Image (cartoon, rainbow, N blue to C red; front, side, top):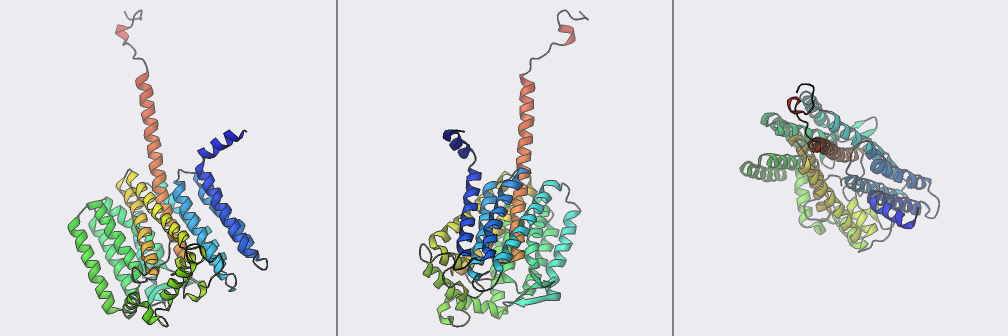
Length: 440
């Protein structure tokens, strides 16, 4: 094959070029830090495992169904970036969060695939949606019975030595339930589930997740009904709930005080946000280098403040590019929602997009001190199995809607082409008018 034909082939497959560049980046990065001073075999393993996971999720799985490869590429890049940052920061600390996150990444790909199949192949939701609703309601309430408190919120349960956050998994059910009943104009079921979810989350003091749930529900309601009055009432209610949360919960008062002036509390409750801001500033434009810096001085750097670690090691320019990836992901998800052929599918895609967008704004806005820091994870990047599976599940819902829409468009095209071919055929005379016929 000539060089000219190779170039033409490369131009025809920009998705393959993008994925290969991602695989090369992470292979080189893991190999570089694994050879630091001495050989770290976990890093060598990850230099192979992570690129393979990227290839499987972005190039191999789409062979079985239509897929938005740009959306897949962005989500998988962010997942791999999380594994890389966690491994580079914990390599000298003797922890194994990077390897665990790679395992969660693999589980997340499986969860994404299950959500794609759910949207593609389940045609009747009349009974299934009620089962999903009751299971989600029970799962969400579990921490009230057997949960453990973390940073002021009782939203974790321990299963077999592993901590799980049920509210992360219920996000998927919330979108399905709201989308189904809104699209069928059945107000009472989705309203009851929404009120129940907010009440349980308030009892758990999980205000960050409650904020994500509430604004996702409000956005879906406005997108479907266009009712400005009720949406305004919902916004007023959110403001009232925020004031009530501030009055009722001491840890909320503390977070607001730290947000207003973290330097006043730099040795106590404001230590985390101060160290995050210092890390971002010390990284400068181009960063101190992969695996360098002092990320472990930031409390809970591997979940709440992992964006600060990214900026410290890779620089502010790279951090801005990460934000641009989230923006592209949100725009892509919105495009999928607009192209959907049914209200149910459109609301699913919009709900998944809005939920990812709100969560991203809450955590990165908190790290940058735009809003009070709230304990939610940075989608795809922060350490945590339930968070990873939940975020990849949201991508699965988006991909499922995109694939169904593509199938419907291809079906319409085939029907249109067949009709055009039939119209192009010469019209046959009837029996009575056919010259030389048997019945002249």
